[in-house]
Amino acid sequence: MSILEQLRSRFERALVIAYGETVEDRADVMLVPASNPRFGDYQCNVAMSLTKALKDNPRTIATQIVQHLEISDICEDPEIAGPGFINLKLKPDYLEAQLNSMVGDRRMGIAPTNAPEKVIVDFSSPNIAKEMHVGHLRSTIIGDCIARILEFQGHDVLRLNHVGDWGTQFGMLITYLREAYPDALTTADALDLGDLVNFYRQAKVRFDQDPDFKETARKEVVRLQAGAEDSRRAWQLLCDQSRREFQVIYDLLDVQLTERGESFYNPLLLGVIADLEQTGLLVESDGAQCVFLEGFTNKDGEPLPLIVQKSDGGYNYATTDLAAVRYRINQDQAVKIIYITDAGQANHFTQVWQVAQKAGWIPETVELIHVPFGLVLGEDGKKLKTRSGDTVRLRELLDEAVNRARADLENRLAEEGRSESAEFIEHVAQIVGMSAVKYADLSQNRTSNYSFSFDKMLSLQGNTAPYLLYAYVRIQGISRKGKIDFEQLGTGAKIHLQAEPELILARHLLQFDLIIDEVATELLPNRLCQYLFELSQKFNQFYDQCPVLKAEIPQRISRLGLCDLTAKTLKLGLSLLGISVLERM
Ligand code: ARG
Image 1: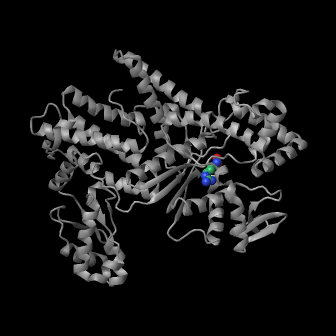
Image 2: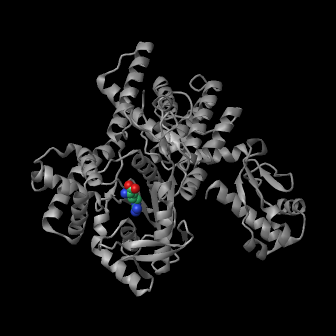
Image 3: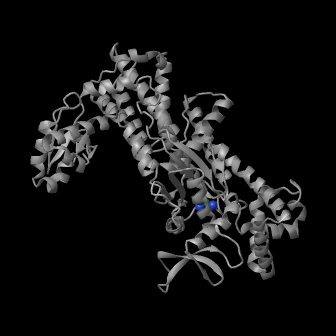
């Protein structure tokens, strides 16, 4: 049982004794970490919430609860403050016992859930032949982190890459290549397709300028979606090419995904339309098949339709998502489906889900969640662009992060007069570069826009990946310097808390489980970043104020134990962000 769970059950018992079973049913004990450490570690706000039900003032209720509360083995005497907050401070003995039980546990005392769920995280999802842009980078980094956290909790997570491999871009691209490089559509590698994006741009120019081209391209999509052999072959070649390019990025970021693109659902689209027809939701409007939505109107205040089949018979993004949500519920048996895209797609999901809901496809047990995120801005506060105004290529952006990390490292080595092998430099530059990019993204509240700055993200100061990595390295340095093998400290390492910085660090270490729960519920990775940042700060304060290797036994062993728990928590926490640690840097 976590600390919070233990405290919660003690409060529930006190409530029952004080006010009888019925109160307990009505009240959530409202136990939360203290808003200010001066008030203690936790606070219970239940007294305020019970004033109506019990027709009494909250301070009296708080006093009643405290009278029946048995927690002297965990906390100091509770204090009632303000209108009726009950403040709790953990006892050092209890802190010590908790920490000692964490030593040697790779999960830092966090048990896997006893109610594992099938969860789908739909993330990354770039569009084939189009640019994989920084928005997809955000989705990839945030989605991977959320998937890692749910996996750690013990859920059965399916990581789906819903790539856009079925849209109108293929009509354009195939029509263009058929004209300009016909061989490219029949023979693999007939043309170096390394720059599909450039072909796409040229095709788009033709599409926008030439009405005949536009018409042919539109027909081409319909042919492809109807399964014409030559179109399918061309499409396959283009997809393979894009897939190889995306894989380079996923390898660099160390992200695993199962590709299940839009095309996967093609055979199911007919069924979607037929079933919508059956439920009576389908309405023809200007030749297109639509479902009218509630809560969405056009400029003139008329109800807005969601088009599910265009007048030319073609299907669209929404149709695919309707098929996907059904498949995920019925075939994958997912009970939670999390979609990670930019905030601009919020309406799309609300609309698709509304239609699926109306059609009766979403059982009550299933939760659909959109996890929106803001834009990536340049340092000028505008949408991130290259100097020439083009979209930033992800590959180049990641390479630059590594190059800058390498340059920083080489400067530092020169300053410190250190010499290191080429492999060491390469390894450190890779890890620092990738983690800086990931951490800069994850440490922001995802709902806001954030500005991308290599200088900031690579700085050794502040809330950055290098700062956290360095805290870990510092601890590994202690073990090297003192020739200490943390694994050998074992359970003999009795932690005994004396100095204030030790207590502060200990309290923070014990909140890790709470943070993991919070991140999993609110799907906000920045909470975990903030926690790890504070952990590093608290460790640094402890290490600056409390001698470790110079302390006498048994204090030395105890402090080494604290160092070890900090390192393991950092390592685990960073791994949940998709960041690997370094032993030296
Ligand atoms: N391909 C889309 C885009 O680039 C994202 C897909 C998100 N997932 C979904 N099931 N619609 O914007």
